[in-house]
Amino acid sequence: MNASIENPHFLLRRLHSLFGLLPVGAFLIFHLWENSQSRLGMEHYNVEVFGALQSMNYLPLLEIFAIALPLLFHAGYGLVILRGGRSELGRYRYLHNRLYWLQRISGVGVLLFLLLHVGWTRILGMFDPSVHENLFGHMQGLLSHPLGFTIYLIGMLLAVFHLCNGLWTMAIAWGLTTSVHAQQLSFWFCSGLASILTALGLHGLMGFLS
Image (cartoon, rainbow, N blue to C red):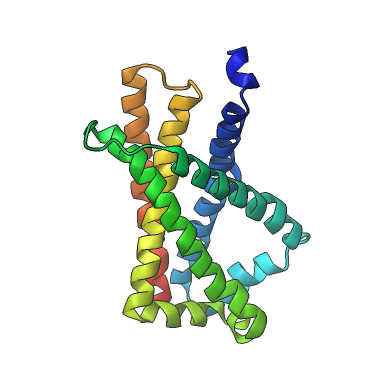
């Protein structure tokens, strides 16, 4: 155990999974809930949801230190893990080996989606004040286009899978589910969580179009 702790990759992998769960994963769940409020209409979303968040004290510091930096570390070290991994899907065809590689692929997909999402909302909002003045209308315009809706739908599904599958593998790596039975229970719990978050995400996307 001491040899493992002294290994820098052991510690980095633990930080990688921890950051993926607490700051990043928790923010994803909050963000899905936040966007599900779109069903209550434009005024409610712009004023009670987005407007309320923008008026929070120390919001820029929270976004940088609680979201952006943990996300950058999780994404950056995830790419390091992906580069050092070996694909043996042809040799090991069992489900969990496929899920391992889907986890890596989904991480790249989520990263690309986040770049698009931040570009279409945050960065564009720096040059066009109307984006932040009416974020509901801006998202409605993006999602009204079939390509835009498809991108957001795929991005949401990849993000939910990456979180829930990562939670399942994290429980194994941290020694929380060591027996086969415990891993099966954890797998079904994470699958149920994924179903709930997917429904919440779909609810939010459709709310912008209602």
